[in-house]
Each structure stands twice: as C-alpha cells, then as structure tokens.
Length: 271
Image 1: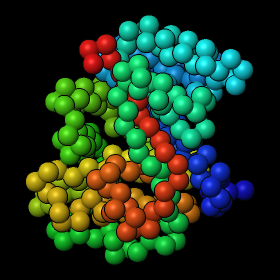
Image 2: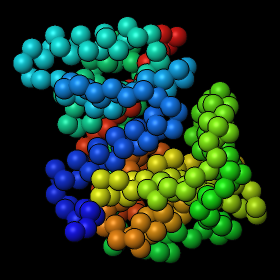
Image 3: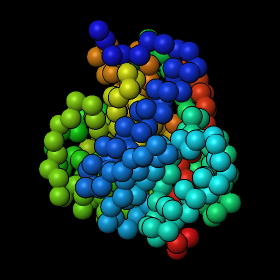
C-alpha cells in the first residue's frame, strides 16, 4: 500500500503540511545532537547550541479544560529555561491564540501561509533557467556551498553561517532518501538552493534561497520546481511549502494554493 498522500481535502492537506514541518524539526534536532522531550501538552527538543534554532517546541496541544492558565504556565516554563528558542505554531495548535500569547510576551512572530500543489500540474519547463545548472548535493564540498548559499541568500547573520559550517564539519555528508539538497550554479558559482523533505506522504520544499546578486533570472523558481519534479517521478502527488511574502506571488503563479497559517515564533533573553 502506497504512503503517498492523494487526498486534497483541506483537513488532509493541513495535517500533511504540519506533519512534514514537524518532521524537519525532528531531523534538525537529531543533527545537532539535541535531547527530545514529549508529554501530553507538547513535544520539544533542547541543546547546548546558543541560538534560537538550537531549541524548539514543535507540537502544542494544551487541553481545553483550564486552558488559559495552563497555556501561560507552559510558556513560562519554557522561558524559565533561559534558552533562545523557536516555537512552531500550526492550525491544529491549542490554544488557538498561542501565537498572540507569545507575541504579548515579547516573542518575534514570523507568519507564513502553508501552500500545496498538485504535482501532476507542474510544467517541466519551469525547472529551466538560462545559465543555471542544478545538481543534487552528494559530497562535503557541495554541502558547504549549499549551506553558504542558504545563509547568504536568506539574509541570515554571519554567526549562523559559522554555526552551520561547524555542524557540517562534524558530520560527513551521508545520503538520506528522505532529505535531498539541491544547488543551482551559474558559470560554476553557486547562486541558489533548495531542500526536498519527503515525509508525511508529501514532498516538502524548504531553504529556497538565491544570492542577492543573482536574483531576477528565475533561479528561485527553477530550484523550487526541480526537486518537486524529482518527487513526482518517485510517485508523490502533492508538494507543500511555507511561503514568505516575497515568494507568495511566484508560488501562486506556479499553481500553489494557500492552506492555513503557520508561524515560527522566536525568543531570546537578549531580544
């Protein structure tokens, strides 16, 4: 029996997007050597990494009974750990106003609509951009190039690049069937990136980035479509992602439809 999701109903798509996102959190936590915890209210990981991405809550289901008091107690418990953190908020998260509660406590909120696409509707020509060569990362050197492209193309701080390169140095590249890194190069120089995560019956796209000097040539579109075509060739029917405001119109043109709001909420004592 196939594990590929073919159900395009709203509940099925929301669950698939959430499951895929939670899967990326778990995979990331494993990579950095985090410790995982879970109870009825939440699931989270923590580590010694002094960055918001080093500690994260990826599931929250506070019971309806006494929810207000329980939610505030849960937030305070995580903040009392004095660790920079990221908290994933999904449509199924309870309490439903957790996003607003965190914002009131000083957390930075990054909202992104969940989006889904029928992979059978993809036009293969959209994966082509003049002068762009797309390769699947297969060794340590290409992985470091991919990481630099993601960090610089996404506008992350320099300390983030130092951190991810340190992680890469600790772990030699190991092929994983569910995680694939795509690197786009122009005249031999890396310019764009994306990540394909196959989990929850759908093909998730993450880490789409293009260097500032290489924008406006369709590279971001091409590096998004290439892994989705690869997933389609493997039998996947549905592609999902979460879009920034910058990429929203591009994804709409490709045929992605919006399904729910997802948020990455970030906090540190330093602000």
